[in-house]
Length: 298
Image (cartoon, rainbow, N blue to C red; front, side, top):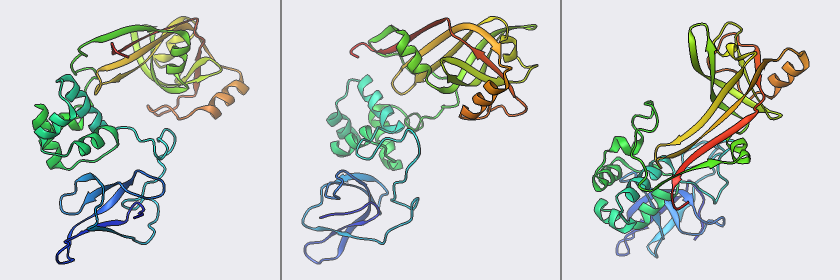
């Protein structure tokens, strides 16, 4: 048996030959299209891991254009390559809550009245479980569907529970540089006429220097001509862990036309705040420190 994403899996009654159940194959586990398959059943909308038996066969559908239902398309940079899936946010929240309570997968699956293989699939791969599955999981874990879906993501991060055995360690210079990465959103701390201010900015890391665009009369522009602090961080709410990196160094305004042009050409995005923000500020770190909170066993 071989299939492609978007094909139908038909399960027939061995007595009458009538269709007993059918679903769309939305995921493959082998490049050659052999079982098992991830199937979204038409009667429940639920996705389960299926090892087809002798009563099942595949109905091959016409090739669908990219982006149609059941077709997996390239989502751009950062998308895991085929065959190397990562867990989705719901699965990570389920796994984190299960571990916090000291529950095994089989016990959690029994409480949620679902197959252990499906719970493993949900925790380890991107998935879109049905509302009924989420309700059962939330009940089994003593939480809410909203919490498993990540409700409150617009609230300040870090509102979850701390790890049972957290480990706080310093990051070395190479780790700090790696986590500072090449671009993103960071916060610059400056002194303004109205007092201290911490302002988020879109930034780039080019040739070892942190660079961001702003307006001459803005708060971030007050960084020019002094030593400033620049901070980036990441909080993984589902796993109750995270890291932060602090860079300290002198800030200057970039005036050389060739350097300005090079910064603009290499920028990944324009400032999210919009407006005229064509003044480039560069910070050359003289001190780089960081810390990370993770489970003690890591």
